[in-house]
Length: 462
Image (cartoon, rainbow, N blue to C red; front, side, top):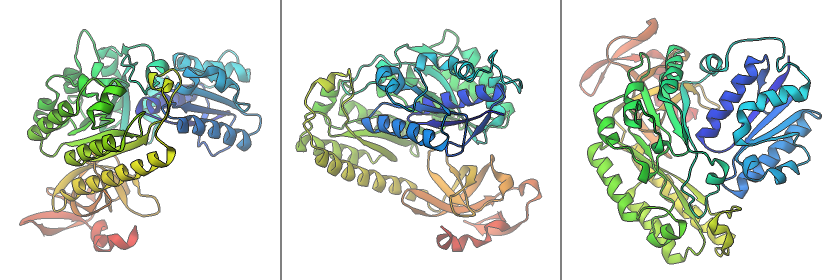
């Protein structure tokens, strides 16, 4: 049986598309293996937001060639879309396939391997069915939109994903139904401009509401929304419908109005702050996370301090900080990159430290509370499990393996570096006949899993 390995860089849209490609390979009888394993085919789904991302794609191609000499190495994604000639010049790469040709990627590979007629001889199901049944995950990505026409001064994405497109709502609902029937508890909606989703039948707010009505779906999460694309009524829906995750990722990029204007971002820092304050007033425990860029063209010390103080005032639940990197064809690339690499590194370190402090504060507010957590896999190097709350805090706790994929109640005992640690409690009955005992929690008798008896030794085991 032919083996294929896949590697993904970048956003959740890329992650979703890699999963679709993997399932398409499975439907043709390929075995999907880890990227560090020997394989007949390696697929690198690239990102090109920064020069670092480009470099990681090239490194992955070299690694694959060393691991399995003679393997077919495919480089696809945004790097392949925006710089096909440069990617074609990478000696290790066998095929270059842009975003617009991703649907034909598997057919191209099968052709290259000579497995005519586009088949390895073993049908194992359709890609849609495989996607729902073969991934060992508790949360499922569901891409509903693609493309961007914003053309911010620093961003190459509109050149990589040129066509604005929304998946018809009946297709979204059909895919979500398959995922629900396969046992997924959380669906994460993703798109390049998710808030620009359009369909004659359902707008984004109503689509989200419909998705929560599928039996078995306990959560619907949104991946990222631009401030100017925020759907009308979304905040109210989060408050009214407990299945809609209280989490908004809204890219800020800078908290200084002068920098925002040069970036060609269509809002001011004041408008951003007003929306965050509105969101928190309606849903006090909502997590607002963000992206912040440092070292953009012409960013002075004063402008950086302005951006830093703005982010400090908003106390984001999490911050993704990255350094400006000139990208070909963008407006900013025609200007001198006048902030030194050393200064970018200094500013990045300060902003990251701030983000870590704010993340710890947000998690710390949960200590002593009982939160709902979707149980995932083991924490690396421990016997503990972890999962996310609906407002995007990772919680670590002891739990029986049979609870993976279930939403459980966890009492938060302590936090460290933005992660919460606690123990599972059951206020009605123990699921699946698991052993437990009664304990008093905040004046209420609850059942506690016996497997959690060692929670007081938690710090020694991580």
